[in-house]
Image: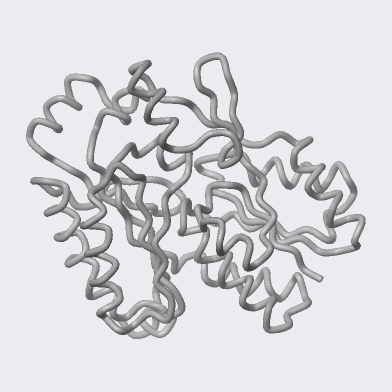
Length: 291
C-alpha cells in the first residue's frame, strides 16, 4: 500500500484530505515568543488579529526531524510505502527534513519525496493526481513517482495580492515603497516559477476589478488546461461576492470536472496577506506539445 504524506502548505482543505486519507505534517508558526502548529492550534484569522495588534508578521518554520520520524513510524509498522509531497525546496526545508527522517529510520527504500516546486493548492493538484492513481490500483512507488514528476513542470500557480503591508512588515519591501505602491493602487500578480516566487503582470485599481482582469487574462489558458481540477484559493478578508463570481466564471467555462474553492493556510496568509486570490491549474500535456 502507498500512503500519501504532505506538509501543511498544500491547503487542500479538510474534505479532500479526509477523502484521500492524506497524512498531514504541520509546519510551525512563530508569533512573538510563542510557537503554534499550523492548522491545529492557529488559524489565519488569528494570525491577522495578532499581526494587526503587533504591527508585524509571524514567521514560519519547517517541522522537526522528530515530527517526521513520528509520522513515518506509522507507515513502517504497517509495512507501507510513503509518497511525500512538500512545498518547494526553494521556500522551505520540509523536503530535506523528511528525507533525513527516512534515512535516520533506515526506511529510504520505502519513501519517495516529491519536491513540488510549488506551494498552496499548486501542491494540492499534484497530490490529487497521485491520490487518483492510487485509487485506481497503482501499487508501485517507483511508477507513481515518475508519473507525478512529469506533471510538476505543468502546474500553474499565480495570485494577485491586495496589500503591501504584510510584505513590508516582513522586511521584503520598505515602508516608503509599500506606502507609494499602496497609494497608487498597484497590485502585482505573484507567480511561482522554477520553485520560486516572482512578480508577473502589474495591475492597478480596486481589488475586485483587478481580480476580474486577472481572471480574464487567465481564461485562454484555463480553456486549454488539464480538465481534471482547478482551484480558486484565497487568504480571507475578501469580498465573498468576488470569490463566488470567479467560481461561477470558472464553472461556466464547462471545461473542468472539479472546481474547488479553498481558504489558504498560515504560510500563504503570512507571506501574502489578506485579500489575496489565486487560480491554480495544470497545463494540459497536449497543450504543451501543441501550443
